[in-house]
Amino acid sequence: MFVLGIDPGLTRTGYGIVESDAGRTRAVTAGVIRTDPKGSTAQRLLELRADILGVLDDYRVDGAAIEQVFVNRNRGTAIAVARASGVIMATIAGHGIAVAEYTPSQMKLTITGSGSADKDQIAAVVSMRLGLGSISGPADVADALGVALCHVQHNGHLASRTAR
Image 1 (cartoon, rainbow, N blue to C red):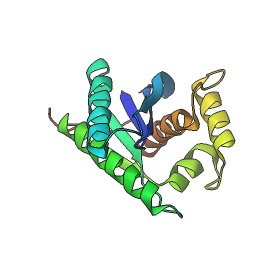
Image 2 (tube, rainbow, N blue to C red; image 1 turned 60 degrees about the vertical axis):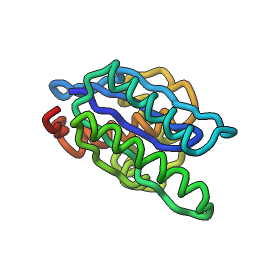
Image 3 (cartoon, helix red, strand yellow; image 1 turned 135 degrees about the horizontal axis):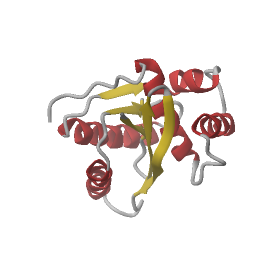
Image 4 (spheres, helix red, strand yellow; image 1 turned 90 degrees about the horizontal axis):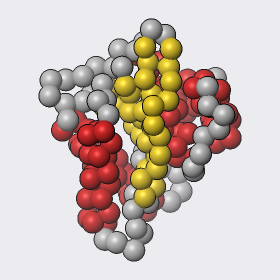
């Protein structure tokens, strides 16, 4: 079973796909989608949608999970992330794939055992659990793989899939 994990953002969206089979989980692919901050919001959302569609076309994803938007101090950033998140969720759902949401602290607790783990701890545990030497790219990539692992763990390898 392939599970897509997403750490959403308008400027940078991390994605990672893990395969879970017979109790073993491995990384299939991971990366970051970037949009040009100089572009209009609408154009950037279209680019993000196209790139997510590309990932879905390249891999037969059985389930997906996305990190929920977290509002701290910067409401402008939260709104941009919420817009990106909505486009991503609609794009994935349009492919007949159920999308679960996990808060950042849920993912951290599931992956590291601490809901307040920092980015370095997440990357280290995700690398260890997936047998990777290291995770290249920004923290968004490790977070996306962490969200995918969180979904696998919460669902015992049984991510739901609706009819396509």
